[in-house]
Length: 226
Image (cartoon, rainbow, N blue to C red; front, top):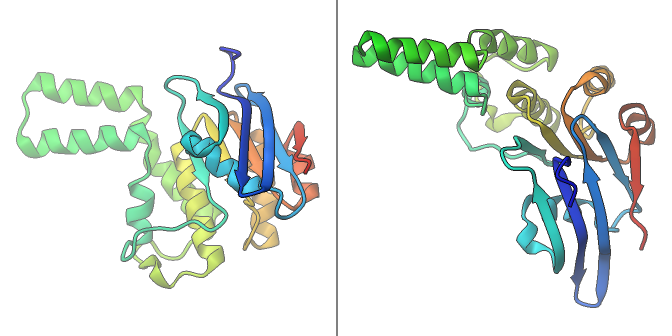
């Protein structure tokens, strides 16, 4: 395993009954690298993604993420807890700055002493907490999302996908796994997403049927063969 890799995959295999989806797959992803996986329908692309997120489901092989890597997975059809508003989803994003702001608010509410207050402020500075509010508003606008107080239960597939993308980009992970990221998206959002991912400093592993999109975004393409 290359210690420089954010993700190292070594000879993983997966079968269902007598059908082998993939066998002895080996690859690695470095910081900032953008990789696409292509294959025929039914060849196991989504299963491979799920195996990377839950390595215990592989029949054989090893999946290793670098210690401390911030990883996020965009499913083909994202799901959120029922009854949440857009605001609750976005402000519950796993950004360290949001956690720091919540801790600061708790210190204020508890009437913490000067040392506790200073530690909370230092943590906000260290995690870019003061700027995260602006990032949330930016992503809310870029993704053309409904009002912050709208409950998401009645959202269309496209609205849910855009909400999941906004949450993902607020968090700014080191490595993103994406399963068909352009599904349910309008052309203007796809074009914005393409440019955003090209400029994104993190690493990316993506499966998509959109050949033009993946060739624009990804520098490396792996093909699964039956």
